[in-house]
Length: 118
Image 1 (cartoon, rainbow, N blue to C red):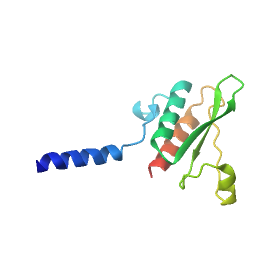
Image 2: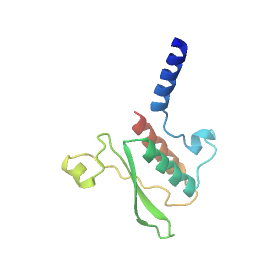
Image 3: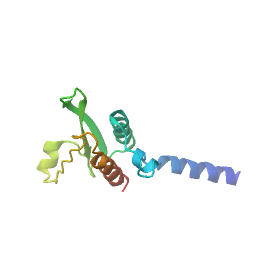
Image 4: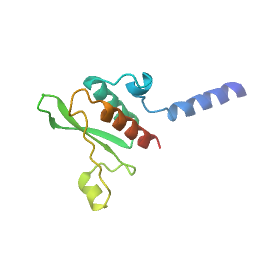
């Protein structure tokens, strides 16, 4: 009985501290990068799993795809005016603006996920 209780306790703790999603770049050993729908799904998953990440639509691209803003905030404040009032540094990363250049997309996914985890 003691073993069963310990196993259930450790299992529930590991679920409560589950890892954030891996990128396709990581899962392929650096040989693949995701396409647009997969990228959006990954960011949505990160948004759902982390209190430090918020993804929101911000209009449409010239190709007719939604543009998204992803905010990563250590104090979970996602209001840009509030962040400016607190004199927080805001870093804008734009990527995916040229087809065939996935490096920035992969790097920003890894960076934001690692910041949210740590």
